[in-house]
Length: 428
Image (cartoon, rainbow, N blue to C red):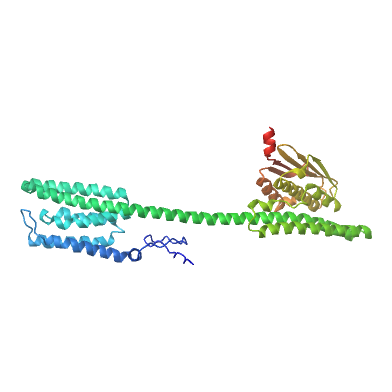
């Protein structure tokens, strides 16, 4: 059985955790170096001092030998430049300028002591600033060294070979430091860009998950409202009728209809909850209607409750695609529910459904907007019915309007685009 790969954050890039669980860097020394950056800076500064300070005491072939004061001054400048290397991560350009001071101030005889420290500093510029800053600093430093060598050549023409070799060695040292630093810096910036992109993707993933969860909650609430509101309204109307009638047969028939309506509501809720519990269903499956969900059944339920509902259809609504059929059914159900609740004295609730080749039109009109005890538009203020219909119609790309007409009729008008099937497309 294989062991799982250890997960950790890339230590060379501080502040990149954020739950990304990146693989840890390979190598014990690299991980130690990354976890202790200050120790690494001190070690680099000590190494630069170890290689540069003895060169200040070496005797060169230059015609004018350095005085003891110049030698001690060179040692002090070298030590200070090496100490500045400790801050190369946070102030790389300042450290590089400071490291170039000995190369410009000291006499040519002490030039070997000034070649290594600027290379370390230029490496830091490339890694912790940018490649452009590195090569700009390289060009300025090379120009300053060339001017220094030219001035020394004018003063002592006989030392031209020594000065040229010193200039070449200094420029080569800077070039090596710049090339290595550019390679390491570009790799570092590339990793930082990848990690930053991963962090952005993780944030976007969490945001998308939250938006999807909110949309799912809205969709579930819409479905529950449509199922519970319509069926309970029918049940309440039937129960009130059964209570009010002295006819035992009519009361028994009403209670039987209550049971039938309740069983239908339970069937729809079980269907919806079953979809929610199934992890393998597609996102749109929740919108698929139950087999019994159709416009005729909604109208019949309202008629059984004693409401004057008349259905007129052109075409076959049952032949529509599942999502379109459900949207149409819910529009009719919600419109009838609002009429039953807010226009109980309506003398006519007219439902018209026209199925065309390219669209489905629905028109629901009740004439009890002013006759009821409550205004018919109460369902559109502060409730979830009409907003839910707008959401459902928008889901299928249609349009919906609802409102009072002629001060006594409440009209709901919807138009749902009908997708063309491949058979229809081939026929055209």
